[in-house]
Amino acid sequence: MVIELRQPDAAAHRRAQRELVDVRAGGDRRRYRKLDLSFDQTYVGTPTTRGFSHKTIKNKIAVERSTNDFGKISPGPVDAFAGWHVGNGERTDYARNETDQTNPKDKGNAGKVFDWGWVANLAVRVDSEAPGSRRFPTLVVAASLSLPNREVAEEAVDLLRSAAMLGMEPGVADADKQYWANSVPGRLLKPALETGFTPSTEYRVDRLGVRGGQHGALAVEGDMYCPSTEPELLSDRRRSEGRH
Image 1: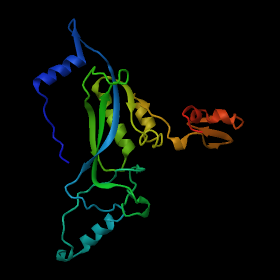
Image 2: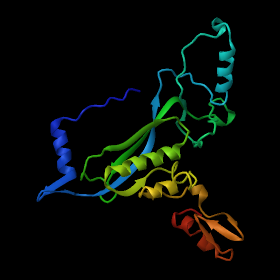
Image 3: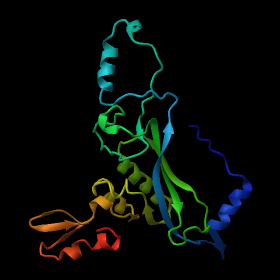
Image 4: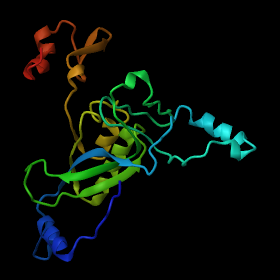
């Protein structure tokens, strides 16, 4: 994949300035001071697509380094240091210092689509108060490049931290369920709240209702309830979404 960055022409730049800023009485007044974001990852391919498993790469490197006659090593293109991007199905977010176990050859991965490469983490400015309007240009305000399946939550937090440095009031931060609904609070929710952004998300269907508990209290979608609570109240969200 080739990403081409072009400089905007002068007319487009002037239009963007007019939409973003209203200059009156010598001052700078923005039409909408909040910065609402939508962030996600997109796959970026590598020149070579053979790939390797991160579970066995250390052993392969050790064998090559111990080889005295490099002519005995099988010839072939050098693989870029990247990872397997899962194109469909459940994705895994490995924390720092954890080994990426993703392997297309595993039996449990039958039917999944894998691509060797990297992922671009992108945060795009959106308008949560007037969706579909054109009050300002749709711009990528923060971006990074990382390995698939690795520190997805931390990359998202870095996007929010970068966006918070733009001098605008942090607003809503929207993402799909692979983020807010799939990450533990300590890795995404708590550090994201520290940046000033408000998470926009919903619960996964398979995590609605009672999910364990502690000291007799029932854990229901982030809150603790008395064990004597009526079952109808514990499943209220499920009923409101038309799921029983």
